[in-house]
Image 1 (tube, one colour):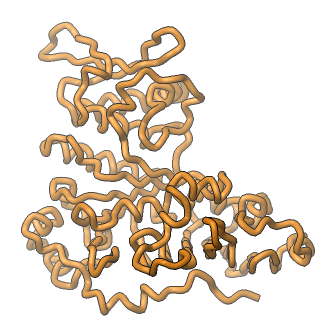
Image 2 (cartoon, one colour):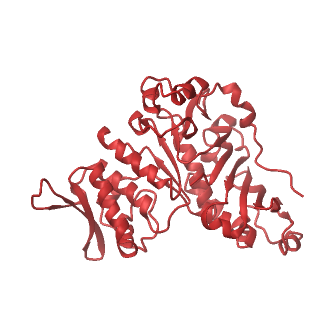
Image 3 (cartoon, helix red, strand yellow):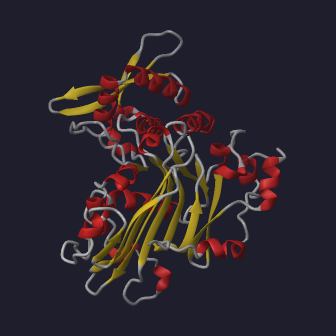
Length: 409
């Protein structure tokens, strides 16, 4: 599967003043702690949440618009914040829709007293024959070449200034596929403590970001696809030797996880999640993220190597490689063991650096590319020797000035 999100364009979002990031599948965002990898992950989370929740709520979850704005932009009112994505849609079932690509972006202006308004919002969908259907919103006015939106757009009383239009307009046929894909992006930072807790049951179709509903997700996988449950056990035993099965147990109205371990044919032993290590629970949460029944269009996995023994990194990498055949995978890491697979090429790598108070994301340097292409060193070896270098910053200036919007009409 190729990349669904081909590019992410950011304008004054968190620690990124401006930038364009191109993605492959999978893509590894490699950088030191504090370089801003989590802020790139949050851009995906922000986009996905904004497709289903009011913008005010999305900002409030992050401490308000002043917390999301780029802090290097001055102490006055927050500057305009913008995000845009360029997507490929000509994969799998999307071929039935006759669509090839899509581009969506928005820009938000901060107002006094932590308020804000949408300055501009644009969506362009390109069909396989090259024709384009679009809407272009400027404040409370919408222009479009799609009927009946072109008629509705002439009215100026149906859009709320601080709300995005695409959750409403996405029900119109040209934009449905893109809206569904953006809604189904997921970002994961599994918290072992949440898997140890007794959990309230839910539908189990979609895993929460921290893994807090893992037991329900496991039950849904067992109901819908026993084969996937078996694969989860096989992957888990490769990551955590002697641990080969997980099931749910009920305590009153709550659910808990129970792990089965076996050594050399001895009698299996069961341990509930509060007895399991952080590494085991993080690995299990990642397995659920990959095999959950509502398959994400894209998953971002933050530091999958955390609390995992280096010997298990290969199995984690195999899982991510497997997942990339079903969905787009983005991984943030600073651990060389995660990059040791021979199949990782320069196209899979982006270097995240912190320079002059800002996050920059770059392709790897020509020297690093040469080392990989000529098999002189692998990506993990380059990172261990501190030779996995970014493209010089001045070479990326043109890309960093990429516009959030295109000309339409």
